[in-house]
Length: 66
Image (cartoon, rainbow, N blue to C red; front, top):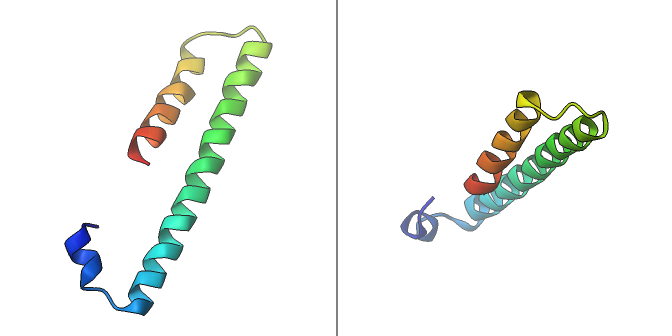
């Protein structure tokens, strides 16, 4: 959403957008935590390899999008 779009919204629509953004942030934080947990578990089990890099890639993508 751009600033121009936000200025055209009503108060109710702005509140809906705020809730949607909050939910998105919570979901992203949960996914990042889950993926970090996978990486830590993988390192603890001494299985550092390609399967450890996949969660790191997804964490990078989630952080860049937020």
